[in-house]
Length: 131
Image 1 (cartoon, rainbow, N blue to C red):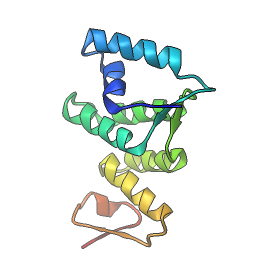
Image 2: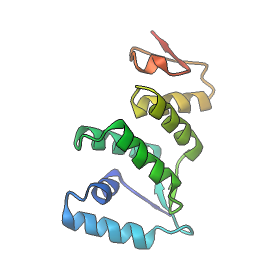
Image 3: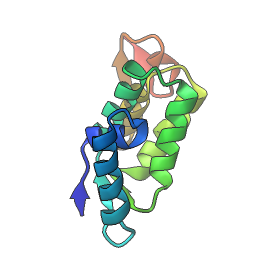
Image 4: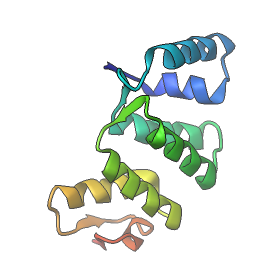
């Protein structure tokens, strides 16, 4: 298994650099297989959402679609896939950032009874409390 960095996924998805897009495409489509998937950790997913939103103006719907496609791709091994799916559902149905949705789900998985925050949008999620 080979780990994938955020910038490889960004170049593959955005096609904003022809050479890097081609190299990412060739690598992902020829190297990442069901038997030998590319590994995507949680940090990469959070960075990917941030970059696509901040640098490319992606909407919540577009971000949700990208995340869902990545999660359903059998050629990728996703860290904590089920937790990420739960966070994605929270993201789709709420107004909090994906990173907050994921943080809340990871904290719940770790046994936290709640997560305290100053983030008003995050407090709308189950398991968060305003400090």
